[in-house]
Length: 99
Image (cartoon, rainbow, N blue to C red):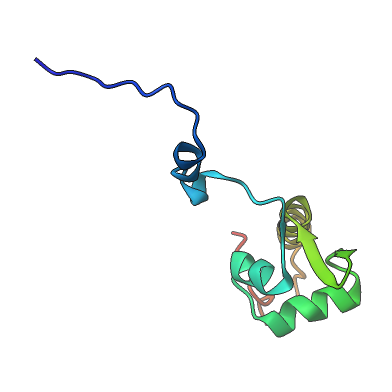
């Protein structure tokens, strides 16, 4: 026979056991955002400078909202997949993942 132990104590130690990956981050530093997107830190700063990626400032911290990273990726996918191919272009578009 198997027994199940149920612990109803909501102590802080129980909450600390929650998997970090199960929690959705609300914001990232530029370095963390670059890791999430799989790009370099310098590229993320280029995107910020060009206005393609919006940031918020909290004191001296620069943060990129999770929703902004999702929006940016969605806009990249739309730009890639919604553009018609040029018939006379012999060169494929860079990073063209569309069929």
